[in-house]
Length: 335
Image (cartoon, rainbow, N blue to C red; front, side, top):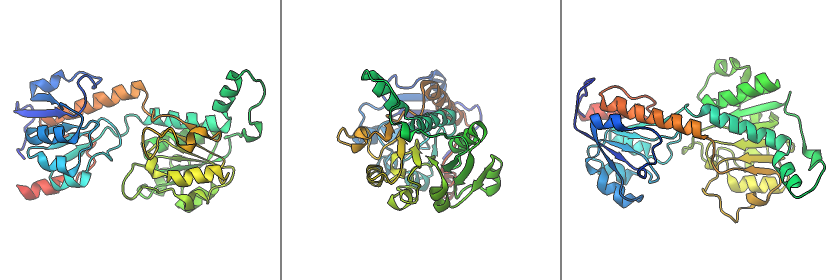
C-alpha cells in the first residue's frame, strides 16, 4: 500500500455497495479525491466484478465475503455505516491487509433508549394494554404480570457503549442493583458506573431484567442458550437489542412457552425479517419490533461519521473506529 500523505490528491475509487440515493448525507467531498461508483445490482456477482479496481468499499446489502475480498486486488478499506460488522469477513480482510471500519458508539443512545422502552413495556404490559383498549375493552390487562423495576436487579451482558448507558439509566433513574458480564472490561470500569462485574452464571441467576449488548461473532453466537435461560428466575425478563443469534431463538421460544421466564423484548432475530410463522408473533409475553434500534436521527449521525471516516482515508489521514487493527501487521509484512 502506498504511504498516503496528508492533503495529497490521489487517484482512488470508492465503490458504494448500496443503492443510489441510500446514503443520507452529502458525499461530494469524496469527489475531490476519488472516483465514486455504485454497485449495479445487489448481488455477489456484481460486487465481485466491480470491486476489482476499487480502493474503498462501502458495505451494503451484499456481505463482504472472502470471495469478494479476494477479488478486490486494490482494496485498502471496507467501511460499514452500521455498528455491527458480522456481514464482513474480518479475518479475510485482515489477512489481505485491508482495514475494516464501523460507526461504533454513534447510535448508542438510540439503542439504549429502545432497550429501556422494551424493558418498561414488558414490566407494565404496555403493548398488550394498548391492544386491549383498541378492542373496545376497559380494565387492567394481565395486571398480575405488572411489576416495578425500581430497586430490582439489572443484568447487562456486554458493558460497551450501549450497555453502559442502559446500566447507568437503571442505576441512577431506577435505583437498580447493577450487574454486568463482560470478559473485556475491568471490574473498576463497571464499579465506576455503580455496578459489579460478575460471571455469566451469577448474572443469569440473580437478575430480574437482563439486557443484551454484545456484537455477533463466533464466540458470542448462542452465548445465551437453553442452559443460561433456565438459570433465570421465573419472574425475570430478557431484552435483546444486539444481534438475534446471540440468543438461541429456539431455546428462548421454548422457555417463553413453558413459562420458564416471564417475558422477552426483541428488536433482533436469528433470521430477518422474522418469519410470519414464528411463534414469537403470537405470544403475549413477548414484545417484538423490527430491528429499529437506530432512530432516524441516529442513522443520520452514522452516515455522517461513515462519510467522514472515508474522507479521512482518502485525504491520507488515519481513519477512526478500525475494528481489525491487526491488518497493519499483514500490510507491513507485504511491504
